[in-house]
Structures are given as C-alpha cells and as structure tokens.
Image (cartoon, rainbow, N blue to C red):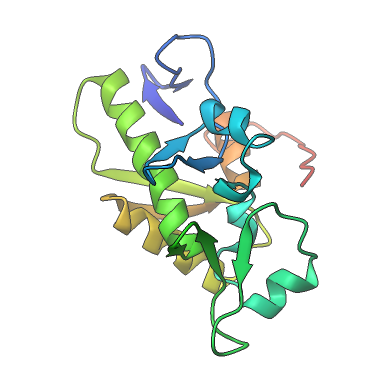
Length: 181
C-alpha cells in the first residue's frame, strides 16, 4: 500500500515500522477469526488446512479453471453444484468465495492504512496482474466494495509500476522501460 505525500509515493509500513509488504495469507484460528499477513504465514506449516494463500489466482475463475492449474493447496477447494460456478474454499465448517477472502485482506490493509494515516480511508485504486480478464477485475472490485472501499480504478500492475517511477508525467521526456510479469 502506498499514499502520495509531496508528490512522492510512499509505502505504508506495518505497526513496527519495519515492513511495508503484507503477505496475502489468511489463517483462521479455532474461533474462526481471520489473522492476516506475517502471522498467518507462520501458521501455514502448522495448520495448512486453515491457512489460505494464492487466493488472487482464484478470483473470478470457475472450479474447473482453478483445478486445471493443479490443486496443491493444503486447504479445501470445493466443487460447486455447477462446473462453471465460481470456486469456494472450506475452512472448518465455513465456506468462502475468493471475493470473501480477498475482502478480508483488503479490510486489513484498510485498517493498517487508517492506523498509519490517522484518518478514514474510503476509496482506493487497486492494482491487478495485466493478464486479469474482465471477470477477475470485477471480482476484485466486488472484494473492495465488500471491504468498505470505493474502488476508483483497477490498474494493471505494470502500468502502476511505470507511474510509480514517474513515466508519463512529462510530455517531453522519453523513457524506455522493461516490464517483467
């Protein structure tokens, strides 16, 4: 996550001020409370059946599409009634869609941003892989809305990276960039 200050993009650190990246991993404890980020990563080897990761790869995709990539997850990926329906994940007795799980991650990011900035955060721009199709982009928007955010735009990650380095801000300056996805 980042914000703009004095024309510069600045990453939002965690509460310790040491890390700016938040792993997109969710661990559900025995009380079914979601723990997100580094603490969830630590639980991945202890409770793989309750630790969800790589959820972005499932956004807006059917069960068949997800299974075509292989099912090497420690958690349960459930086949819905219809083969073309969106995939679901089972944790204990609860079922979640990728949108539900992504919304939990976005809620945590929103909370961290609000704690750091000491102000309400209601709107955002979300970046997605350039290969995301319309269904995946819409699922991302839906997750943002479920997290209580007004998603102003969905931007391809390579585009966001170029903007972060000031590409396109000057009409006279030319730059060549290599994007690796």
